[in-house]
Every structure is written in C-alpha cells, then in structure tokens.
Amino acid sequence: MSVWFILIQVLNGIQYGLLLFLVASGLTLIFGLMGIINLAHGSFYMLGAYLAYWLTGATGSFALAIVLAIPLAAVVGLVLEAGLLRTLYRRSHLDQVLLTYGLILIFNEGQRLLWGGDVHSVAIPELLTGSVRLTETLSYPVYRLWVSLVCLALAGAMYLVIQRTRFGMLIRAGACDRDMVAALGIDVKLLFAAVFAAGTVLAAVSGAIAAPLSSVGPGMGDTVLILCFVVVVIGGVGNIKGTFFGALLIGLADTFGKVLIPDLASFMVYAVMAAVLLWKPRGLFA
Amino acid sequence: MTKPFIAAQGVHSYYGPSHVLHGVDFRVNRGETVALMGRNGMGKSTLLKSLLGIVKPRDGEVRVGGTVMTGRPTSRIVRMGIAYVPEGRGIFPSLTVREHLLMVARRGAEGRRDWDYHRVLETFPRLAERLDNFGHHLSGGEQQMLSIGRALMTNPELLILDEATEGLAPLIRREIWRVIAAIKQTGIATVIVDKNAHVLLDLADRHVILVKGTVAYDGHADALKANPEILERTIGL
Ligand SMILES: Nc1ncnc2c1ncn2[C@@H]1O[C@H](COP(=O)(O)OP(=O)(O)OP(=O)(O)O)[C@@H](O)[C@H]1O
Ligand SMILES: [Mg+2]
Image (cartoon, rainbow over all chains, first blue to last red; front, side, top):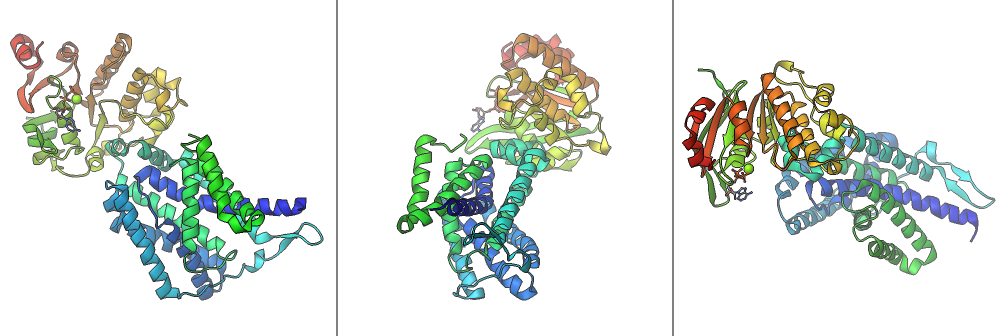
C-alpha cells in the first residue's frame, strides 16, 4: 500500500468526517439546547440530496439548486418545529423518539411518492470536475477537495456564530438554563425555532453537496443518522468541539474500515466508539 | 395617587396541587423601593415569579404599566422593563462575565441607555478584573454582582432582587447594599427580598410582609418602626 493511497484515504476520511460534522452539529445543538432527540435529522440530509437532484434537473444548475435548497429546508425545519416538535420540549425522550421515528417514515414515504424508488445521480458541476494528479496512476477529484473546503468554511462560520455573536451566547446560555434566558427577556421559542431551522439547513446542505459523490436513493439518511449518533455520543452531547473531532475520527474510521476490512466495515466505527467511551465515558472533551 | 408600574390583584398561585399564594395584592410604583418580607416558605419568591409569569397565577391579575399581562410569556413581561436577579443568581457556567453582560444589553423605555457595559464595570470594578472568566469560576459575591450587573444592562424600570445578599461575606454584602442604594438613587424601582430586615427598614419606601401566602402588612417604614410588634408577630424579629 503506497503512501499516496493512504493519503487519498486520509483525505476521503477527512472529507466524510467534515460532512458528518455538519449533520451531527445540528443534531447535538438541538439536543443540547432543547433536549430533543431528533431521529428525523438524517431525513433532512436525504431531503437535501433529493432537493439537489430535483432542482439541478429543474434549473440546470447545481449551484442554483443549493441556493434554492437552503430556504426550502429552512421552511421544512420551521414548519416541523412549530407544528410538531414544539409540543415535545417538556416530554419524555420516549415520546420524542416515537414521534421523530414517525417522521422518518413520513419522509421516506414522501420521498417515494415524489421521486420514486430508483437511485439517481447528480453530476459534478463543470467547474469542479477535474482532478489533481498525484502519481502516474493516482489522482484526487477536485470536487472532494471542494466539499471539504465548504464544510470547513461552514464549520468555521458556525464556530464564530456560537462563540462571538449574541445569538451564539443565547444558544450556549439556553443549553444551561432556558428559564433564566426567558427571564432575561429572550423569546426562547423563537430561539429554539431558529436553531432547529439552522440544524435542518446544515443537514440538508450536507446532503446536497454530498449528492454528486454518492448516489441519491431511498434510505440514504439512515446510514448518516446512525453515524451521526455515534459522533454525538463520542463528542459529548451538546459539545461542538467534541462533535468536530468525533466526526473526523468516525469519518476516518469508516473510510479505513471500508478499505482495510470491507467485510466488517461498520465494525471499525463501533470499535472506535467503544474505545473512546472506555477511555472517556462522557465524550472526548468532557 | 401615582399609577403603579406593576400591580398584582388577588393572585392565587400553585405548584401542582399545593396552593402557595392565596389572593395576594401587590404593587410597585415608578421609582419606588419596596421590601418584600416574610419567613422562609411564605411565598416571597413565588410572588416574584408570579409577577414575571415564571409561575402562572391560576387566578387574579397582573398588570404591567396598566396592561394586563397575566399568563403572558415571561419574556414579554420582562421586555416591558423588568429585570430579575433570582435566588441562586442564575449565572450561566459556560459563559464569561463579558458575555453575560453583552448578551442582554438593550435600551430601556423611550430608548434610555443609562446603563451600559462601561457603567456596569465602573459600578462593579471586580467584574472588570474577571471579564474572561467563566460563570462557574466566579465566587458567590462575584456571581451576585454579575447577576445585578446583567440586570442593569437591560436598562429596567423595575429591578427585582431575590435574596441578593444571601450567603455572602459581610464585606461583599456591604458592597452589594451600597450598589442597591445607588441604583435606588437613579430612580429605578426595586423590589427587594432579603433576610436582613434592619437594612431594609432604612432603605425601602414601603414594606410588604407575607404570611402563608397572604399579605399580612403593607405600609411605610415609619409605621413599622413605630410598631415593632408587627415585625415580631410576622417575621419573628
Ligand atoms: N418548585 C416548587 N415546587 C413545589 N413547591 C414549591 C416550589 N417552590 C417553592 N415551593 C413551596 O412553596 C412555598 C413558598 O415557597 P417560596 O419559595 O415562594 O418561599 P419564600 O418565601 O421565597 O421562602 P425562602 O425565604 O425560603 O426563599 C414553600 O412551601 C415551598 O416549599
Ligand atoms: Mg425565596
């Protein structure tokens, strides 16, 4: 196995990890702030991928598809939050899991009705079709590098919002004591709705930019959801920094697992999770 | 008679089945300092929470600036110009001192900006030394100063202080009282709940004493000082 081959797997692993981070960060923020376990979060990823497929076809432009997918996903998030999840904030986790599991079924059925059971593909946009030549036989696709850069930029933006803006301070404060935040005159319902919509958009954007890398098909949200839960658990619930490094770790574990032991690919991810939890039961940075 | 800034009438509040406030009337006029007194468990904190909508009164009415606000969301009520320094201080462990202050900065009624970041830090020089410290790294006294400073950052008409000197060293306690007296001078109305009745007798314009969720006394300090048996009967002083 050459150094270049390993480098390629590392790049792939990081790229997948960064993508997982964008999805998992919404999951962990929503859980940390509102105490909601949202199983339908993977469906938002799938929604993004299908929107990319559908809108690219309709408009002829992948870039335009992403731009349009953002407000659509935000609306879906806002409607679900106001119509369903809001009723769950003070309810048990079992109620939340039941309702959001129901949402997965609805999303899957909706996907079948709208787009059928076939697997689709989305073309890589013209500008990003090239690849970087590494050796005589090996090269690395520009699009994957672009995905990594977009994810990194979004992660950086998220860091700045959470650490530097009032909105971010309110999110962190709300995760500690939402009643006190309300007593300071902040509309907590509005805050929750905004965070939920932001989480939905992040997951959908991840699905959209991942669409040209993988196929767009039924059930594609499920794998991501499960990996994201692993990421959230090893990152420490509500911990964004932990989620970031946890996602990179799982992205690499999943990628190397598939290359090294294809028969037991998913085993690698759980082995890493078990190891992390034995070492740090409350998450990487707890 | 001056119009009250906040007025509760016939308020009944419960925690589940337990009936805590039994028809309480309570008002604070603009600029007035009211001491709310009573033994442990008599319902002082519950009355404050009922005013703020944190506990929703099951019966009765709360008006703020003449508008009926009973049952409205806490954030709406607070936005009418109330700042709350709760029992236990309500400091966020994972936010720095600076963030606590900046997070809630806003103009008061008619765009008033009497209180801002710099004035709060002048008032509490100790906070200025600890700007980058997280909430859980502060001493009790510093947390209390921060809680009051944060409240002032909203430029309130009414400041509600629940046990603001509880559990503090005498020196810090004196510092807090100094600041409360200074706040009073600026014309902000205050409701103060505190174990230290003697300080309150000198500081407050009016005293309200709760006994088992009802108002046992509502009157001026002079009347209380002239009739010490009232204090003895109601709070055992
Ligand atoms: N969250 C709650 N759930 C149930 N009962 C409560 C709750 N908070 C207070 N109580 C009860 O309500 C009554 C009034 O409590 P409250 O906190 O208003 O009293 P207080 O006058 O503020 O007392 P203290 O001086 O101890 O702060 C007490 O009997 C108390 O046990
Ligand atoms: Mg109390």
